[in-house]
Length: 211
Image 1 (cartoon, rainbow, N blue to C red):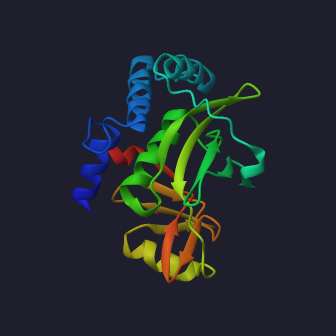
Image 2: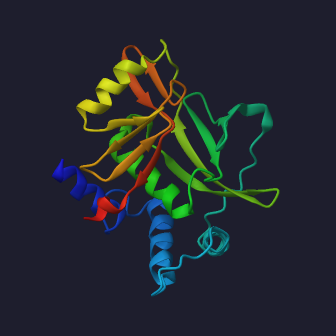
């Protein structure tokens, strides 16, 4: 697991080699640099609203505003954190307001971790969209059609084999990696032809991540 942790640290808190020129990594680098610059000796953190204001200014200057109109005719589903739309015959787009995260940086950390682990459901960041004064990240992902109901016991076995251990409800943690992995119910992990596809993931890094 040490090599996995090193590679993830390189991606999240270093320059890394995974998607350095992508829009996703470009935004992540900005947010991480802004968080470091905003840190105070007394360890007081800036507000998410302040982070978001700086983020939109950056996105506007860097042409990272998603200008394509999203038709409600293409709407598929909605959860607490996002709205899902059909994009084409093979993919969907998701509008995520990062409500599960304390900061936008945490959301982009989660995207990078997801892309490291789950190439089959890779997130492509397309830009930001502002709807009724709310900010959403727009991400594209392959559309997975489940062929069977996900067996949560088998999912648990799979996760524990990979050293993510059950904490409560549908939440897991890897102490060795310093990563929390949450909300793994059968709508967020689909099963197609006996294979698991992680389509909606919520990752958090803990203080142990950087040790």
